[in-house]
Image 1: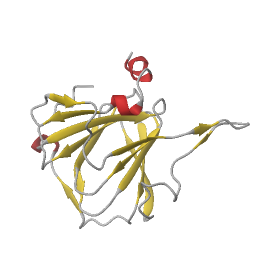
Image 2 (image 1 turned 180 degrees about the vertical axis):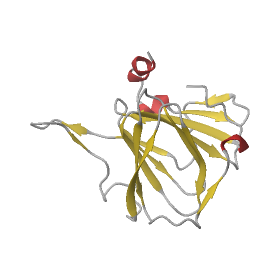
Image 3 (image 1 turned 30 degrees about the vertical axis):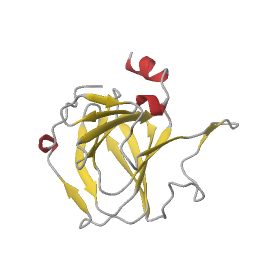
Length: 169
Protein backbone atom coordinates (compact mmCIF):
# COMPACT_ATOMS: atom_id res chain seq x y z
CA UNK A 1 0.00 0.00 0.00
CA UNK A 2 2.87 2.40 0.80
CA UNK A 3 4.36 1.84 -2.65
CA UNK A 4 0.97 2.40 -4.33
CA UNK A 5 0.57 5.70 -2.48
CA UNK A 6 4.08 6.84 -3.31
CA UNK A 7 3.81 5.86 -6.99
CA UNK A 8 1.20 8.58 -7.47
CA UNK A 9 3.59 11.31 -6.32
CA UNK A 10 6.70 12.77 -7.90
CA UNK A 11 9.86 12.93 -5.73
CA UNK A 12 9.30 16.64 -5.13
CA UNK A 13 5.79 15.89 -3.83
CA UNK A 14 7.16 13.21 -1.54
CA UNK A 15 9.46 15.78 0.05
CA UNK A 16 7.97 17.56 3.03
CA UNK A 17 9.23 20.14 5.45
CA UNK A 18 8.52 20.21 9.20
CA UNK A 19 9.78 22.21 12.14
CA UNK A 20 11.55 20.61 15.12
CA UNK A 21 8.18 20.14 16.87
CA UNK A 22 6.98 17.96 13.99
CA UNK A 23 4.43 20.46 12.66
CA UNK A 24 4.15 20.54 8.87
CA UNK A 25 5.32 23.85 7.45
CA UNK A 26 5.22 23.52 3.67
CA UNK A 27 5.72 21.07 0.81
CA UNK A 28 7.02 23.89 -1.40
CA UNK A 29 9.87 25.32 0.73
CA UNK A 30 12.64 22.72 0.95
CA UNK A 31 15.72 23.26 3.09
CA UNK A 32 18.15 25.47 1.21
CA UNK A 33 20.71 23.47 -0.73
CA UNK A 34 18.78 20.18 -0.88
CA UNK A 35 18.17 19.46 -4.55
CA UNK A 36 16.06 16.54 -5.79
CA UNK A 37 16.67 15.50 -9.40
CA UNK A 38 14.51 12.84 -11.09
CA UNK A 39 16.79 10.47 -13.01
CA UNK A 40 16.19 8.72 -16.32
CA UNK A 41 15.88 5.01 -16.91
CA UNK A 42 16.57 4.23 -20.54
CA UNK A 43 15.12 1.16 -22.25
CA UNK A 44 17.76 -1.09 -23.77
CA UNK A 45 17.81 -4.55 -25.21
CA UNK A 46 18.54 -6.94 -22.39
CA UNK A 47 17.66 -4.47 -19.60
CA UNK A 48 17.36 -0.78 -18.74
CA UNK A 49 20.25 1.66 -18.32
CA UNK A 50 19.85 3.83 -15.23
CA UNK A 51 21.42 7.29 -15.21
CA UNK A 52 23.19 8.50 -12.04
CA UNK A 53 25.20 11.69 -12.67
CA UNK A 54 27.08 13.59 -15.35
CA UNK A 55 29.98 15.95 -14.70
CA UNK A 56 28.05 18.62 -16.65
CA UNK A 57 25.19 18.70 -14.12
CA UNK A 58 24.93 21.61 -11.62
CA UNK A 59 24.98 19.26 -8.59
CA UNK A 60 28.35 17.78 -9.64
CA UNK A 61 30.91 19.46 -7.36
CA UNK A 62 33.82 17.18 -8.20
CA UNK A 63 34.62 13.52 -7.65
CA UNK A 64 36.23 12.04 -4.57
CA UNK A 65 34.67 8.59 -4.28
CA UNK A 66 31.51 6.57 -4.73
CA UNK A 67 30.39 4.11 -2.08
CA UNK A 68 27.37 1.94 -1.34
CA UNK A 69 25.59 1.38 1.95
CA UNK A 70 22.94 -1.28 2.61
CA UNK A 71 20.11 -0.43 4.99
CA UNK A 72 17.91 -3.20 6.40
CA UNK A 73 14.13 -2.95 6.52
CA UNK A 74 12.97 -0.55 9.26
CA UNK A 75 16.53 0.21 10.39
CA UNK A 76 17.71 3.80 10.85
CA UNK A 77 21.20 5.18 10.20
CA UNK A 78 22.02 8.63 11.52
CA UNK A 79 22.49 11.30 12.63
CA UNK A 80 25.49 12.48 10.60
CA UNK A 81 26.67 15.87 9.38
CA UNK A 82 29.49 16.44 6.90
CA UNK A 83 31.39 19.70 7.39
CA UNK A 84 32.89 19.72 3.87
CA UNK A 85 31.47 16.87 1.76
CA UNK A 86 28.69 17.36 -0.79
CA UNK A 87 26.79 14.10 -1.17
CA UNK A 88 24.71 12.94 -4.13
CA UNK A 89 22.64 9.97 -2.96
CA UNK A 90 20.71 7.54 -5.13
CA UNK A 91 18.71 4.42 -4.15
CA UNK A 92 18.86 1.89 -7.03
CA UNK A 93 17.48 -0.98 -4.90
CA UNK A 94 14.54 -0.68 -2.50
CA UNK A 95 12.99 2.44 -0.97
CA UNK A 96 14.57 4.78 1.60
CA UNK A 97 13.33 7.76 3.61
CA UNK A 98 15.97 10.45 4.09
CA UNK A 99 15.44 13.03 6.82
CA UNK A 100 17.44 16.26 6.76
CA UNK A 101 17.63 18.62 9.74
CA UNK A 102 18.61 22.26 9.49
CA UNK A 103 19.79 23.04 13.02
CA UNK A 104 19.86 26.79 12.27
CA UNK A 105 16.24 27.04 11.06
CA UNK A 106 15.09 24.04 13.16
CA UNK A 107 13.44 22.47 10.11
CA UNK A 108 13.11 18.87 8.95
CA UNK A 109 12.77 17.82 5.33
CA UNK A 110 11.81 14.27 4.38
CA UNK A 111 12.54 12.81 0.96
CA UNK A 112 11.67 9.26 -0.11
CA UNK A 113 13.49 7.81 -3.11
CA UNK A 114 14.02 4.36 -4.55
CA UNK A 115 13.32 2.10 -7.50
CA UNK A 116 9.86 3.55 -8.17
CA UNK A 117 11.01 7.12 -7.40
CA UNK A 118 14.37 7.00 -9.08
CA UNK A 119 15.98 10.32 -8.17
CA UNK A 120 19.19 11.81 -6.82
CA UNK A 121 19.35 14.01 -3.72
CA UNK A 122 22.17 16.54 -3.59
CA UNK A 123 23.04 17.25 0.06
CA UNK A 124 25.29 20.22 0.80
CA UNK A 125 27.71 20.23 3.76
CA UNK A 126 26.41 21.34 7.15
CA UNK A 127 23.05 19.52 7.34
CA UNK A 128 22.26 16.72 9.77
CA UNK A 129 20.73 13.66 8.11
CA UNK A 130 19.56 10.15 8.78
CA UNK A 131 17.86 7.52 6.67
CA UNK A 132 15.55 4.54 7.08
CA UNK A 133 14.89 1.44 4.96
CA UNK A 134 11.21 1.22 3.99
CA UNK A 135 10.91 -2.04 2.03
CA UNK A 136 10.57 -5.59 3.36
CA UNK A 137 14.10 -6.38 2.21
CA UNK A 138 17.33 -4.39 2.36
CA UNK A 139 17.75 -1.21 0.28
CA UNK A 140 20.94 0.01 -1.34
CA UNK A 141 22.10 3.64 -1.04
CA UNK A 142 24.81 4.97 -3.34
CA UNK A 143 26.70 8.18 -2.53
CA UNK A 144 28.67 10.04 -5.19
CA UNK A 145 30.84 12.26 -2.98
CA UNK A 146 32.96 15.24 -4.01
CA UNK A 147 35.81 14.16 -1.70
CA UNK A 148 37.21 10.96 -0.25
CA UNK A 149 36.01 9.94 3.18
CA UNK A 150 37.73 11.77 6.02
CA UNK A 151 36.62 10.73 9.52
CA UNK A 152 37.69 14.16 10.83
CA UNK A 153 35.17 16.07 8.69
CA UNK A 154 32.05 14.18 9.78
CA UNK A 155 30.09 14.62 13.01
CA UNK A 156 27.75 11.99 14.50
CA UNK A 157 24.95 12.10 17.05
CA UNK A 158 22.92 9.32 18.60
CA UNK A 159 19.53 8.93 16.93
CA UNK A 160 17.66 10.16 20.04
CA UNK A 161 19.63 13.44 20.28
CA UNK A 162 17.59 15.06 17.49
CA UNK A 163 13.87 14.84 18.17
CA UNK A 164 12.23 13.23 15.14
CA UNK A 165 9.43 10.65 14.96
CA UNK A 166 10.80 7.92 12.66
CA UNK A 167 7.54 5.94 12.85
CA UNK A 168 5.84 8.41 10.46
CA UNK A 169 5.98 7.73 6.76
